[in-house]
Structures are given as structure tokens and as C-alpha cells.
Image 1 (cartoon, rainbow, N blue to C red):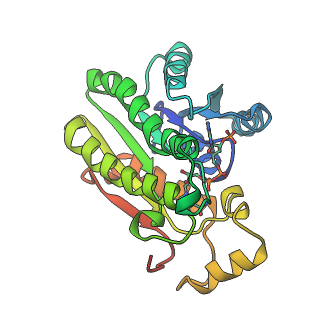
Image 2: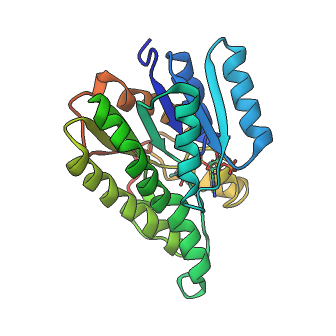
Image 3: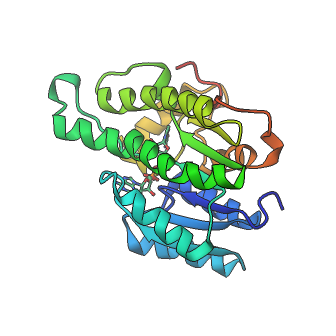
Length: 246
Ligand SMILES: NC(=O)c1ccc[n+]([C@@H]2O[C@H](COP(=O)([O-])OP(=O)(O)OC[C@H]3O[C@@H](n4cnc5c(N)ncnc54)[C@H](OP(=O)(O)O)[C@@H]3O)[C@@H](O)[C@H]2O)c1
């Protein structure tokens, strides 16, 4: 078991790649804190983890309200007394053309995708520093390497996430390692919200491996980054995208 007795917070783990990662981390021995806004899905993830004989709780937070991070850390410490791994994975998509992005939408996307990760990290880092070891993983995107019409807020937030990841790595070492995963097209609710089967077909055609990724493709890389298998990897943005040229 690669994460035996570790405590892991996985934001955005009520569905998609966060859910797959929470389940995998628990199978590898971690006590997992599942988060999101949807209680029914949060409960279902915890039930699945417990049904497999592993350990998890859920904490409902809305990461567009950055200060919710305090509740998350408090409840984590109350339940498990510490935190070893933080996966800043919650994400919100916005599909407005540049000239139509409202400031409210821009703020929401940045709060969910970047600012909440900064604030949660600021709260969690002292706990990790105190114990002399910790791992933080952020979720970037191939959108951090290109621009496409209609995704200005989302693309900008993921570019920001790369800078934040590198800054975190510089400033939180040597105790804390920080890396990010930049997924390509992964078949989750987020991708389904972009469009129908034509969108998936287009993504598959544009991928050298001729498939979309599955949430488990991200979970296995998150496990690698969370475990000592990656103990000399720091400040990196790891693309997990089937080889697409963004
Ligand atoms: N799918 C892709 O192709 C792809 C590609 C590149 C990057 N990404 C990134 O990967 C990450 C995970 O996305 P996914 O594809 O797995 O999508 P998903 O299945 O839609 O999951 C998104 C997760 O984020 C949570 N979330 C969203 N807004 C939130 C809010 N305001 N407060 C709290 N939690 C919130 C959702 O929980 P609730 O609904 O319960 O609130 C859910 O658990 C995101 O950062 C996304 O930007 C995805």
C-alpha cells in the first residue's frame, strides 16, 4: 500500500477524476476527505470507499466561496488529526466568448479553479511543515498551453494554476512537494457538458492514442505524485493527455 495511514483531502471528489482518485487513494491505505457541493454524490463516494473496507468522510464545501476552505481543514483535523496530501482538483468550466465574460463569471471560475487552491494551501501548508512532510497536487489542464474560442476565463485560470504550482513548489519546499496534473480530454461530466457525441468524436480524432481518457488515467498519476515513488519530482506540470498537441 502506497499511502498507508496518510490523510488525503481531494477537492472536487464527488465525481469524475476526483472521485476516481479518492477511491484509489483509499484503496492504497489513505483516509480520504471527499468534498464537493452535492451531498448525494458525496455520500455515494464515501459509501463506495467504506464498502471496500476503506476509510473516508465527506465535507460539503463550495469552493467559489474561498473561505469554505477553513471548514474543510477544521473538519479534516477533527476527524483525522492531520493532513498529508492535498489534491486541489475542484474545477468549474466557463464557455463564454471573451466579450461576453461577466466579471461575476470570471471571479467564480478563478475562485473555484485557482484562488480556493491558494487559500486551502495557505491553511494546510503549516500543518504539513510542522510534521516535516506533505504533498500537494493541483489540477491544471491542456487548456494551460493553448487558447480556444469561447473559453477565456477557464483557459486563463488554468494558465494561472501552472504559475501557482511552480510558486508553491519554490516556497513550500523542502518539506512539501507540489506538482500539477494537466489532463487532456477525460470522459467526465465536465466534458459531457461541452457537447454531445460529436465533441467526443472530435477529441478522439485529435488524440494520437485515439481515445478519450478515463478518470482512472488521472487517478493513477495522482497516486504516483502523492506517493514516495515521485519523491524527487517537484514543481512539475505533468500532462496526461494521450499525446495531444495543445
Ligand atoms: N474532464 C476533462 O477533460 C478535463 C480536462 C482538463 C482539466 N480538467 C480539470 O479536472 C478537474 C476535475 O474535473 P472533472 O473533469 O473530473 O469534472 P467533474 O466530473 O465535473 O467534477 C468536478 C468536481 O469539482 C467539483 N466542483 C465544481 N464546482 C465546485 C464548487 N463551486 N465547489 C465545490 N466543488 C466544486 C464538483 O463537485 P460538486 O458538483 O459536488 O460541487 C466535482 O466533484 C477540474 O479542475 C477540471 O477543470 C478536466
